[in-house]
Image (cartoon, rainbow over all chains, first blue to last red; front, side, top):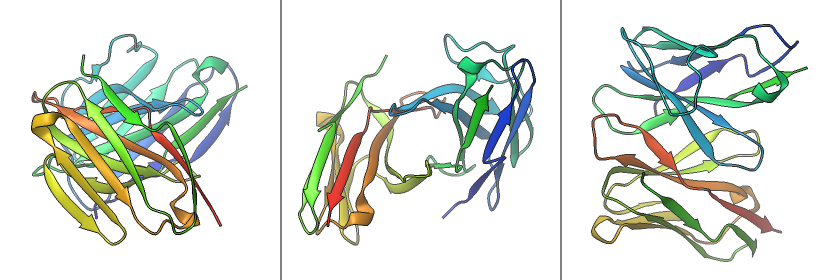
Length: 115
Length: 110
């Protein structure tokens, strides 16, 4: 099956700093990637859709200046949490869709803790 | 927006038992996927099943799109089946977005 990686798998940072999370499709090309957020014992909430070569589309209530998304190539999307605060602590998961397929594949997630 | 409901929310089984998990959705969809989230948070793709029936080992799934529901069957459950099972549906537009249900938390006891 298709493989999606994320880096880092976990990160601890101080309040006010920025954190960048990478999402890569390893064995397929993905014109569209998605970023989700998951709080403990809750479901996944879609944050934004990342399109290669164009601006990301954010879901209602997600601050685009807070969560910067860049989709630089067909295999890489990055999420930068700017000026992180403790309430941004969460599990961030990306997914990718193959060019010729409707099925999505998910990365292993990044656990962010902001002190 | 579309609503995705999963039942039951929690399920405890003895090893070897069978179970059925249900996913209801409120509008037409062009994608339905079942996932197992392991204790480390990784989402494992179980089925891509917008319609019809599929089987993979002890797991099988059926989606009846016209009646807006999908079922995941787990037979002869094992302790390694424990975790959270999510269904997610894709909207009938060109966005390819997936909307997740609230999940079923399964615990299989030895």
